[in-house]
Length: 465
Image (cartoon, rainbow, N blue to C red; front, side, top):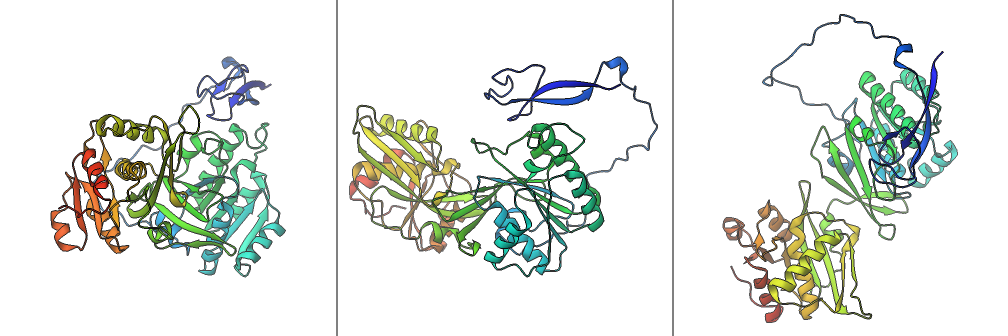
């Protein structure tokens, strides 16, 4: 008789513990251990594996010709861009994001457009009824698309129906609602999420059907469940955005068939998600050029240059302890830039509140934003605007030096396309050839003190080559 073993699994990292405790020893999370029952028993009672001679492993060389991967166009150019040119048949995608951010809307719009293009599409919802999905499709104006709908949470009937229908693209919303009767654990637990994701990934590979899994996220922004699910699938996409902004960013953090860190920009409207072909124009819309504390950062998101506005406000502290508030940027990065400005440039932020915001709800992780952040802080502290129509980018070292960043010509070209006529760039960057060919006037900064002197002069000093 098979003996049932009781273990405790962490719902945050998936670590297994023999007894319950308030804190997971693996990841340090509190109150995440949940009891799960699995079959097992003493080693002596388990059946011994039988040796079986199989076919040998065939090895190949790296050299050789390989046909390009086929792609299924979703009808959404921004989604195709993040996926590397389209969805590969037989691949598994995992899309995560905050509640209400638009994950289901995005996949339903993509499924409808693919169905209109002749693909066989199946949409299975474990969170909404068929009537609710139909109502959303009616609001989006895609109710006429030939999409097969189902509302089911049991994995067995879902797999049986998919093997019978053999669709080209399957949407499962969401992986946390599915459960397998082979396990006694509750839906959404680590064991259930891992088992269901493994079976669906195996189905995708065997039947050459692309599968998109919707995943919930924790309060830390990570996809709920074991991290092994992100290793199983071929692509992991995060749908980001602030509830107060209409902009939505689809970011690829893993892609076996294309580049990572690629982004797609959407705008949420009454009729669903609308693609934004030119994100720079969207993020700079309504910006006042002569405002103090404002700098335009020429950044890179994947292979796409994107211009965003960085806003800073330096104000006298109302209380004894100065406040540091930042939105869209790492707070540790802001603290480092302030320390360099105080130590290397003689600016004082000790008795002042500092507020920093990246306009449009975009989250920036690129070190090239250091110089733009510093420019916004200096402009607000000195109450002097930056030179008119200027873009800023560069990495700041702790010594106060400004270090070169990658793809400088692409950043300047995007700034020129958006009508900017000046650029504050690192002094070590190779911009001479490009400067002669473009209409952009380039000022090279080698020290952070050079930027302070430029802004402190008048805020509109002539740019230097």
